Amino acid sequence: MNPRRIVAIILALAAVLSMTWSGTGFAASREPATLVGVEDGFQLLVNPAMEEAFVPYGFAFNGVACEVAFGWTRFGDTDPRPCWMDARDFAYYVAGTDWVESTDKGTSQVVISTEPYTAGIYQQVGGLTPGLPYGFHAAMMTIYQTSYGDPQPGHMIKQVGIDPTGGTDPNAPTVVWSEPQDQDCVWDTQQRTSAVAGASTMTAFIRVISDDPGEWPYLNQSFFDTALFARTATVSAVSPEQSLTTSFMVRWDNAEASTGAVVDAYNVQRMDEADGQWVDWLTETSQTQATFTGSWWHTYRFRASARQHYYDFDSHVDAYLFSPYAPEAGAPTTVTGAKLAGSLRGNGSYTFGGAAVSIVGTPYTAMTGRDGRYQILMPPLDGAQTVIVSDPAWLSPEPVYGVALGAGETVEVDWALRPPDDAVQNGAFEES
Image (cartoon, rainbow, N blue to C red; front, side):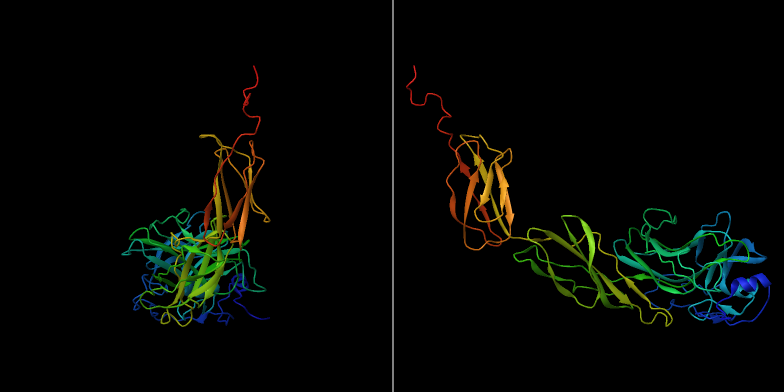
């Protein structure tokens, strides 16, 4: 049998054994662990590695005291109550082993229960500057029921979140959560999120939503470790206000890294104002500019996010944060072709709607509105064009010849129509 954190078997036999489980844990030590990150100028968390004293809160699991890592606060402690525990105590006194799940050879925070739960920990971070961007990362691992046998993804959802207003309600609509992740029995070091501070205090959340694991000795286990809360880089995307071709240059070469970090990649999104949806254009690129190709008479916006690495953070974790996308994207770029516009009128202020204005030999046409106005947006056209009016209520005017419709050009063509020959009664004064 291939042992893989064989929690259920150990619990069922109530054996106090010394085993080696496969995975990323480490043989436990009760020696005080080094607090990761507190010497770094970028780290803003207290006890980010969850190595300092664990604080009991008056609850126990099978006679073992439940406790929360110093500096952190539990949430989701509702019936049926889960238990927060030092991963070393869980290993020694619950699982009966000296193998402790951790990313840094120390310990971690674990949440366990024989019932489903939505629970985690949070920390409020003060002394921040409203309007500046901050990011949060944490390493997480979940084990659904038992690690014996194949992993069972999809039962325990891991996320980290930031409330830029400093609130402590994980259900608040202001919390910006990372994408949900449901891997089982493996450390996930890719959970990260970011936001622009809306107050001098922000709140970092680590959360797991779990299914029912079944009856004892099956347990749902959530391990939290090696967190990072820090300033992120700032960057913005810049593009021209107008482009007279469908292809134009977009730049995001103005990134400024925060203390202790190096910017090494970017994500860039674009939005077509025709649909208003932000979509990925370039992801994790090292480029700082690229050519974008759009469509005539569409207007585009761009925004960028910078990835910065904290290389001295921790050798076991790929510590990097992406800056949040700016709430306000850069100035729009309109791919400007040619425009033909004008009006169709009769005597005085009389206007004609429902007439067709067309450019001969092209598919470009427009109907006049009730105010007699029309507008045709099109790509640039080569050579001189002829413009005609069809189906007016009065007589059709003469065509207009020699109209130039190049890129960026707007041409106004107005017509004043004369009535048909029989529009005036007894116009020849021959009747009695």
